[in-house]
Amino acid sequence: MAELVDKVQPEAVFICVGENDLHNILSDVPSAWKNRLVLIQNELLPRDWLAHAIDNPTVISVWFEKKKGIDSKVVIPSPIYGAHARLVFNALAQLDLPSYIVDNAAELEYELVRKNLYIVTTNIAGLEVGGDVAELETKHKDLMNAVAKDVLDIQDWLTNKTHDRARLMQGLKEAFAGDPQHKCMGRSAPARLQRALGFASEAGIEAPTLHKIAAKHLS
Image (cartoon, rainbow, N blue to C red):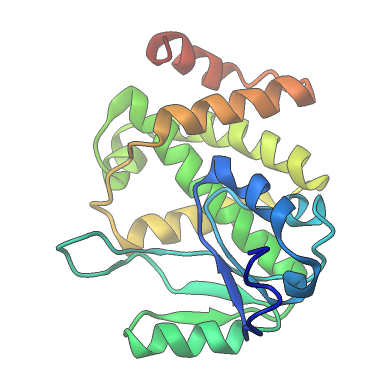
């Protein structure tokens, strides 16, 4: 980025890296590009960009998968917010990937917390029971709710806000319905659990279910 900033004037700069790489990348973003950023991340929250004096990035909460050799799979439409939201919306439309532009930053935060609830809950519960999200909701509901409670305790702390848990749990069920056979445990599940426990420790949150799962599945 440092080599390119004086040579090109991009309309938008997309950052799409692994969760553990995000802060190193954001710390290196040239000042001239900070108002052009589009962030495409899992486990993303406002605190992540605000920590780097990035005030108004465009953010998309991605609800589709695209892996080599297979067609794109959509769970639900992906919400977008920010100055370049229309650019992202139009690009996705060219690929027949559904998205929509949310009205304000508060609604974006809800959508980011909802995605975090989905991905962290399903990954961590998947370490314990495997399977897909339909099985998690129907056969392991108590585990799902216990993990979700711990996850939402952490999300409240990370956002410094008490969120509407009934709405978020309903949003979780909507995502489950969008792709009932979506597998719970991705390859990043152990790292997500470790990250969640780190936040819980920093915040003084007990997170008993997460600790119980970690005792069995983290070496």
